[in-house]
Length: 467
Image (cartoon, rainbow, N blue to C red; front, top):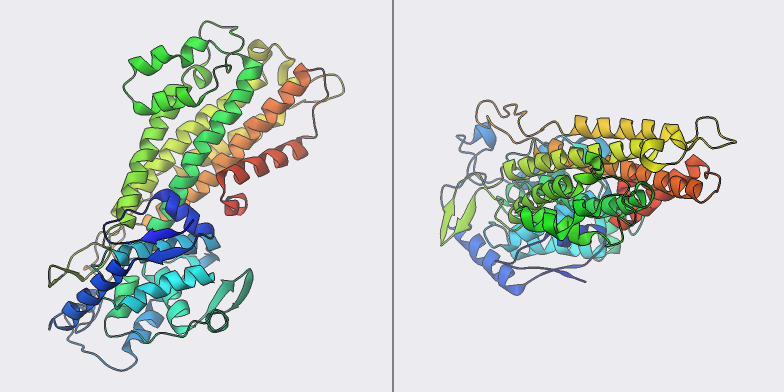
């Protein structure tokens, strides 16, 4: 299904997830008309940052327009480093930037905005490095790399599954290079779209992982049993946190087929409360990210026939949202890891300790080691990235968001939680086998099968390779 971008229309996290994989993108005529009007206002304004002046701390320099300047802006900002961003991350950044431009505030011609949609629909995805942006003054380095590729044909891109030169990808897609008009290079890159796109994918993955964790929990409960009161309608009624009801309603009524204890361990008994709180945090993050993806992210921007200079590019929202989401995932990870320990406890399951049946040495003991490692990683990644501001551009850009770091860590946390959920899933399956009188499956095969199942359910395959 196509993702439609139009002024006043919100872009959802699910839209971004869908477009990051392959959904086509359409920009409505009303948005293109609004951009045409904004560009005319911008061109008629005499003193505008980035067109008649230098950039950053050099804003006081009266520079003016000169031939080749727009290309030079992109070249000098294209300072990305580190590993290659997953294709889905780059596509997410592109659809977010297209959505932000579609709101009509950006001082660019309609064809500049349309090129983002054209490249997405042709599957021309620039090769972009993950590091180099501080998430203020826009995500300058990664967006400059994207812009050089889709407007000028510089650099490399993935095109229909192959890595080729951007010029070749554009030619094969029937897209000609676009000569940028004065001020448009800055307008393209002075945006938080890379941070917002990454954060959106992280939130999307996180929400889907909560669902997968509850599915794995149901397998665990078939082995451990639970007191059904812990997941009752009375709990949902007595707790005003909406996420609690959402968790309880998502669980099968047969989840507690056996009730061996009056009070279950917290990692079972408190699932509605802890997962419910995590869901509330993720919904908050989702709302912030969706607002950023559906707003102006420009400086300068055009509104009501005037040009305004402001800080709409600052990615503090995406940074704080990503940090909140990471903390939520760490709390879920703590619960999952503790359930792996109980799955190995005779006191909880009635099965041999560590599932060490005849013919095994340590049984399934090492599953919990893997779970402990992943839970510790989630705690480490939960450390907030958004507070680590380091001034840039002299003293002018003195408080930056570090949103790309926070958002990338959210993606890494999502990948770690996916693996941790897979450990519980695989271990619960082993316990079910032992309970049925069968020998445990090879642990390597069991975990790999569960990892594939969880990643496929989330729908973002790049998570399986994210370190």
